Structure formats: structure tokens, C-alpha cells
Image (tube, rainbow, N blue to C red; front, side, top):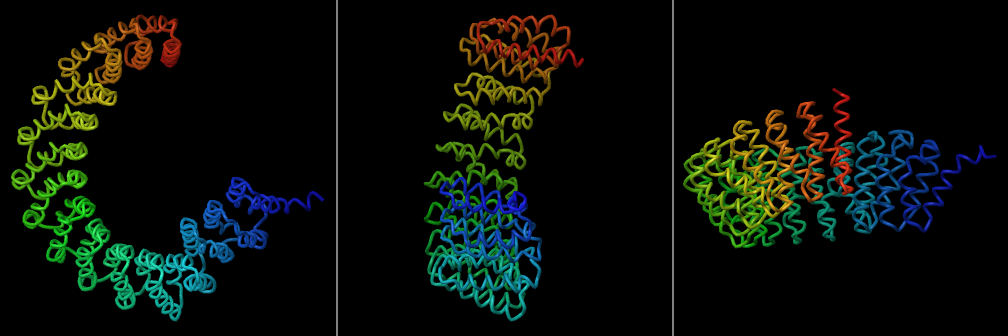
Length: 587
């Protein structure tokens, strides 16, 4: 009897759990659908499980979302591609629910299944499903249908293709803005599957309807359509149909549409080509850079370098640079910040002379901006300018500003400067670095903010790598070791961290003669935090120094620390001793 009942068990349990009041049980049951399907076998999955799921109208969106996701990968469990159509009914139901994320997931799963279905099954089952959804009484079905046309269209017979294009056109004129929005979003995907002859006629007339929609939320989605359609059309058609729309959108009464144009501008320029960009889109871009809405100016400012690359330097200097000067003193800090993050990239486009004359004053004013993010964005891109104007001019004009920022009251600005120092050091050379920036690097090791001290320790190591152990022995090691006597234990800890980073760079000889004695001495510190950090540093030094030094100096110190009254000191000392034993065994 048990043998007969066993195959019924999974479906019975599933039905019980799916009807359970506890949402977690229902969710777990849905997530185990593939296991249940394997237990049932392909035929019973098709005949029992899928119909049950179609009828199961769970009211919880989380359960429905999980079901939509699971069904998308269910083809192997129903017997392969020839039976894929049995998965369509439950997903069709999910395409009509109210919750957007459930519908989106159901559409995604339908697309995945449709992409694998055989052509005759697409004609027999998938295309009628798309038509039913598109004619749905409730707007949710019509919204979902828009995302399925690009799967249905390529396999459709000629008569159905005409019908599908007509239906899509009707969806673009639907009474509900949500449906028109969905149609505008998916137009690019659908257009990519439509034949070239119909692209110019049917699709372009649909697109023109969307560009004149009274809802700005529909028009702004049509902006994305401009770039997608532009790639599909011939250049001359693109100039005739797409370019006027872009120019018109750049003056749209809704700032959201103008923002979208500013955001997508580079892609739109690529769609129409370089010549129309220079003649028609430069004035449109200048308007966006001077827009009265800060959000539009932010989006436009962020694209300034990309846009200038399409133009020749003369056009960029004539039209774009005056706007950049205005934006560098914009009333909105976010506009200045967006500009600062890309303006350095203009230097290679404009060339040396224009950079020195026109851009350098803007860089300097942004480097002194009151808003820290603006200063940060400039600092992080300084190397792009150095490649163009050379180190001499950079050091004369920008270094005073950098030194000033090294003591900035905002720690994130100081942190950005520290991270930039090794790059600057490699470009300036050792002599210049010693004069101007050496003292700063030591000063940061005593900063009040931990992140700065930590970055400063890493900085010292990177400088030692850049200029070599001999230079470090002369300029870094004495000053670093001198700080181990600082009265504040947090600064002493930073020095221990710096020693552990410097030791691998300096090599065993200098580590034994200069660094190790300082660490051993610190083991007698009165603060437990210092002592357990000594144990950690000694552990990191064991592989670097000679074995005899470990035996004579390191191990006795660790043994002493392993008997310390403080539990943490004992723990780390014991750990270091174990590490020492492992190293000895391996050698």
C-alpha cells in the first residue's frame, strides 16, 4: 500500500503547504517545485502539478513572484521543449496580477520559455497568448503584453505579423498611460525584430505618436527609443526622423524629458553620426548645459567630456568651454561635483595650450570649492591633466592647492590626497617629492582619524616600493621609528602597523637591525592593545627574518607575552608561537 501511495505524497504535501496560512511554508513549497516535479515525473508534472499551479490564486505577492521565477526554468521538468506550451497558462495568469514585480518576472519567464519553443508551438500557443493579453480588459494584461512582442514576431506568419504591428500601434495609443509607458519601453526590442521596410513606415509612425504623448513619463521613455531606433535606421533616415525629435525633446516643457536627453546624449550622438551632431546637437547640448533645472545641468555636465570627444577641439573651445566656465561656479554644488568628476578628461581633447589657458583656472577654482565632493572629484583625476601639461606646470600651479587639501578639514578629502600621493610621487620624482611632500606623509601618521592613519601607513609602504629601500632608510624609517615614543597609544599602534607593512619591502637585514628592536621594545608597553599588536607584528616578521633571529629574539618575546595577565595579549602571542612552530617545521 505504501508503495502505491508514495507518488501521491509530494503533490499532497505541496497542496497542504500551498494552502497553509504560514507564508514561509507556502514560499518554501514553491521554491521546492523542481524537487517535487522530479519526484512526480514529467507526465504527472504536466497533468497534475501545472494545472494545480494555474488554479492556485495565492494572494501573496512574494509567493507569486517565486512561482513566476521557478516556472521560467521549468522546461526540463515537463518533458523538454515539445511540452513547453503547458507552462504558458500559469504564467499568463501571473501577467495579469496587480503587483508590478510579479508581472515583470512572469514576462521575463515567458520570454525565456518563448526563446526555446519550437516555431509551430510559438504560432499555435505563444502568439495567441500575446494577443489575449494585448486585448485584456484590465490594463495589467496589456502592460505585460508589450514585453512579449519581440519573441512572438519573428516566428509569426505574414498575416499575423501585420496584425501584431497593428496591435502594438494600438497599445501605443492606449487610454492608460501605464500601457503606453510599457509600449515605449519595449519599442526598441520590438523594432529590432521588424523588417526594414516596415520599420520606416509602421514603427516610425508608432514612435512619432509616442514622442507627442501628453504624458511626460511616456515621452521620456521615447528618448531611449531614439537611441535604439537610431541604431536600426540608415544614417539619412536617422537624420530625417530621429534628429528633429532629439532637438525638440531638448526643449521639452518637462524637465524630466530634458534630463533624459542630457543623460542619453552620447548614445543619441552615436545614433545620428558626427556631422549632424556638430551642426544640430551642439546648440541643443549648450541649451541643456544652461538649463534652468539643476538636475538637467547635472546630467549634461556629466557628459561634457564624452561630448567633446565627438567634436573637434575648435568647436569644443568655441561652444562648450564657455558653458563649462559657467558651470564651475554654478549655484548647485551637485552640478559642480558632476563637472569636477569629468572635466579632467577634457584636457587630452583640447590639447596643451587650451588646457593651460582655459582649463587650468577652472581646475584651480574647483580644487578650492567649499564642497568637499567637488574637491575630491578633481583630485582623483589629476593624472589625466599631468599627461597633457607636464609635471613642471602641474607642480607650479596645482601643488600649492594639493598641499592645502592635505590639511583639509574633511577627512575624506585628506584620504583622497593620500591615495593619490604614490602616483604623484612617481610623476614628480624623488628630489621634488622630498622637498614638497615628504613632511606631509609623516604628518598623516599622526592624524586624528583612524582611516587616515591607516592609509598613511600604506602610503609609506608604497613610497618605499616606489623609491627603493635605500631612500626609505634615509627618509622614512628614522622618522617613523621616532614616533613609537608618542604619548598616545593609538599613534604607537599606527607605527607598529607601518612597520609590519615596511618589513617585506625593506628586506631581512634592515628589518633585523632597525625595525625588530623597536617592536621588541614595544612589547613592554603598559597598554594591552599595543602588546597584542606587537604579537601580531612579530607573527608577520617570522617569515622575513632569519631563523636564528626568531629563536634568539622573537620567540622569547612571544613566550613572555603568552604569560601576560591580559587574555587578548595571551591569545595573539600563542597564535604567533603556533605560526612560528609551523614555519620551523616547514623549513
